[in-house]
Image 1 (cartoon, rainbow over the protein chains, first blue to last red):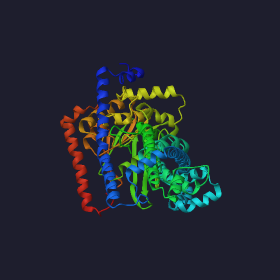
Image 2 (image 1 turned 45 degrees about the vertical axis):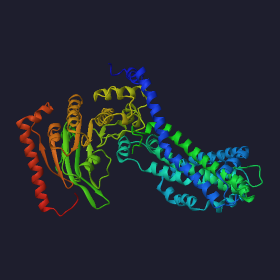
Image 3 (image 1 turned 135 degrees about the vertical axis):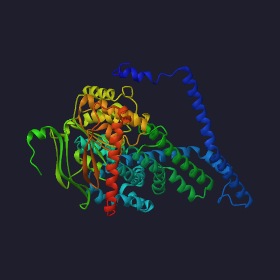
Image 4 (image 1 turned 135 degrees about the horizontal axis):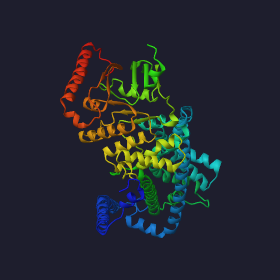
Length: 292
Length: 269
């Protein structure tokens, strides 16, 4: 084969024959079965937990306002499904907007941190402050400044999501393999080109890691903010629902809302995971672990 | 230091004079090293771990700042021309780029704007290291030996007059080592670059170089002329001449190790 014939060498590879297609289907089927088997223990644990819950509620004759039966929670979820669904969407949009904004702002802050030690030393303590300040304590303050609205929920979510992203991405941008750094120095590469061609691509796995951590926090941030923001306003998320159902002692509905918010957290984490896997395919080696 | 005529320097590719590298202003890694490497010559730096071989090599490449002394290259190094190629201990390929993109990288970094030219040069370089059919593969899809070939192709893509190699075959098994040694000889026969190679392996240093510099504790203790005839091939490793010189080198290294372990004050290594 002519060594210069790249098109040929490329097209030689991925042309699948029928056997490959069949074995591919078999592999996929195998993978699905493996996934199902993998989830089985978790499902069994959930089943046992439901049985224990039912047993405790019945055996100790606990009042329904204190601990409703699983079936009653299911019933409350069905009755309130429209409200829950709307709140699920509102909180989902707020958490996602907050997470995406935190990813953008956090990445820009990290780039600034990576370019100057002075900036890093001067501002990093304030990023840590974002992590350590109790979010419940500053939300009322933010409401005074920003109002009882969706925007405030997003701001609270951004604050809670920012630290893991800045921390992780800054580390990725600064900690570069010495041989890569030497390679770029050898050819007299400038700061901007090194940032664009080396530091940023090398920090992508760190960005994904930070985003994954923050995806769980995003839902928490949004719900905490909604506790304060939602009452009696046009905006109603899962947090607002929980606050009002708690006030009216609608325990079954409250538990249904708790499960809905957990589901939202899982979905958001799952989405970030899927996006990151797709994005990271080229960063990953065969075993699926990230290269250094 | 003796005065050197211009003609003499023209025949020299790398000249180190009293090169000293110190870390943290106190721990001296390379101590007043003098070394001349002639144009088109391959010199091996051999010595125990921590003796300053890699630091000296990085100093030659301009990657290490000197506490004192100077490194002169002829022609003078202009980083933007890619006059120096460097093969690292690990292949150090960018995992997010294809093999071809990795090999094209130095040309892009030194500012070659024409993408087609870059591509053609990278393809030629991959062809030279016998990796012609791995262009679109990502580094993790290549074997260890193939990754090292790609790394050599990347170092050679700018057609450097000086090639610096830092234990390039240390992580490979004997078979691959021998293959890549042969490849390096083949590339040198065709391109006649000046090369300095750091190695732990006496056999490799004998097979691949004109002269062998023995380093210890940051100092070049001796530079030995290699009597093995050119052109070189791995089959020479079975000759009595090779065995005799191997023994001589091993004795020299061992002798010096013993000597310095007696004199040692328990320092750097």
